[in-house]
Length: 213
Image (tube, rainbow, N blue to C red; front, side, top):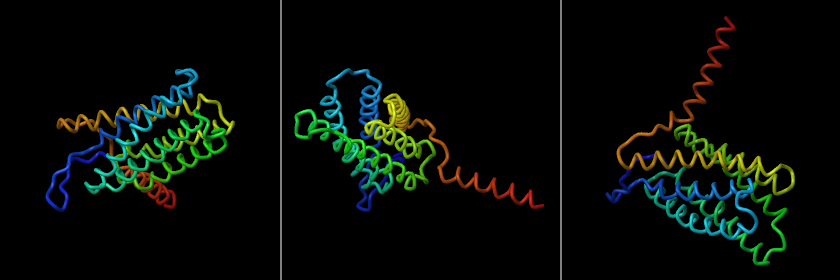
């Protein structure tokens, strides 16, 4: 998601599509955070579903373009986010509102837990990305996992609300980075996450050696 333009094997140049997928990510996190924190009042579910539907389209397109550019981690993440994280819950909310589904829980809560686990697993694919970009994995695990636990009656709504606010901040910073990069400016995202973990491992190893001496 944080790469510059790339050239495919046919010689075509593709610009970085990150901003196209990050903008709706910021929007859906604003919608979910406000819903959990009680900002929108009752009856906001159909409006949130609209954000999810439109944003899901943009994220699916972003994922396809990113894959075209050879970004497997970012492309699969955006495509999966668009379909499972935005379209899926959006359609579930609509089905509940129009009476096609008798109730969202416990399936809706379990689905949110599943999505949180998926984002946690995606951390493995993002280890070569800058550490700030990598944070989508643990932050998403916290936000969606706590949302699922709330839907199952295990946590108060304020906890997932804070989680989605954190994702909102993450997405806004990433969007600023993508837009700045399009103008040739640099907003840092940090070292690759793998280097941070490797550095910690090296520090532990050197400490063990010094103690053994």
